[in-house]
Image (cartoon, rainbow, N blue to C red; front, side, top):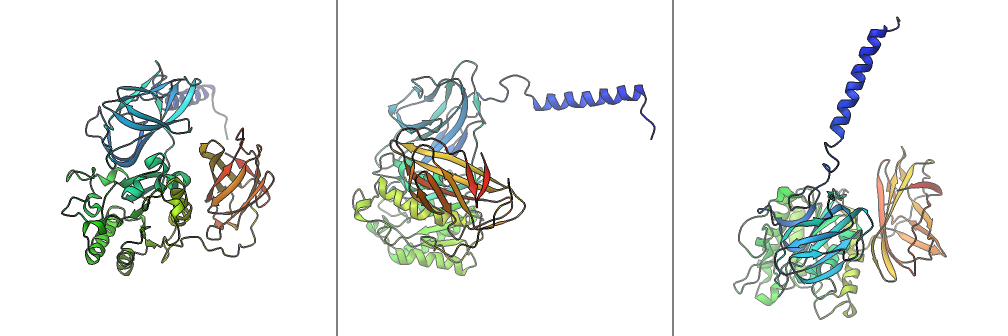
Length: 476
């Protein structure tokens, strides 16, 4: 083969250089802050979860309970621009949610400036719930001069929780943020919405009870129009807890069963692939009719709809009154319901969910090949004396893992008190978590996840070494 001439080499180098420059010009923003946003409601770097009215580009308004937005930002301070008085909760850099009561105008969320760098922000407004009526209107963010927003990581999966004041979190310490729907979404690392309102019924009644059979499809629970644009997000799972209020408004059992069946069909029409869970009300009202509605869809060929028996989940100690769970009660519900939902997210449907995964003999673990696993460890919530941790195991090798056991050591004396989606033992600082049976297999390229609650005193040090079935894993 003849060697290229000097002229040809020049031409090749020129073409290569031009291609490289072209690639750089495409990949590099035209200015230093082009990839950042301005913090306005229309800023694409702000991720809105839940049902938000975005018809006014200068003012976005959330409806229903549990709506929130998330963004990243640079600089050292961040402020909210509000219209009129509202209560809200805000978390900066994944820290505790701070309550802001009766605030309006420009609300300073960082009275003590942060260290210069990139930060995260999540804001949840207290919207209409019970007797509270605030002005939850987001008009944008105020950042440092030269700072801007950056796109936050957005979880792929979304869970929608449909219900009344129990789903809203009425009587808990932080309303929607301490309700089981929010807790479950956080544990599973998913986006979550609470399509719920205090006092709501399933069936709309003549004495004014808001009926979610009809209002589920609405942007706002308290208006007849407009309908929500379901193309704006797709739920991967929907959890329904309705019926507690209907009997007090004269709803009879045949009517309730028909309406529940209609609601299930509406949910299926809007979310063709979602797993749908119909909870037995904790008061046991309309339990038989709820189960019959689920059976009607199952008999019609929809195997991805499940009745969840909640018998024995709550005791009187878990209630703040005779109806509403307290903070501990919502934690109990989340402990019970999280593995049920997790088992169906992304999985193939089975005839019925298990309130608690039934332990099965764990197969002899298949050791992963060296360097074929990666672990993501995150602290998703923290409070004085304790925290919630979430762990995802990634099988980065070329063969499936059949049964898994993950070990690590805590560096700061942390002690696990409860866990979901796995079984654990702890000896001193050493923790061993094994699969729950139903999640024993991790296909090549797949993942398994679990979460836990642990106690701590002092520094909450992060583990740096994990081993899957005895093989060290990369840590992300």
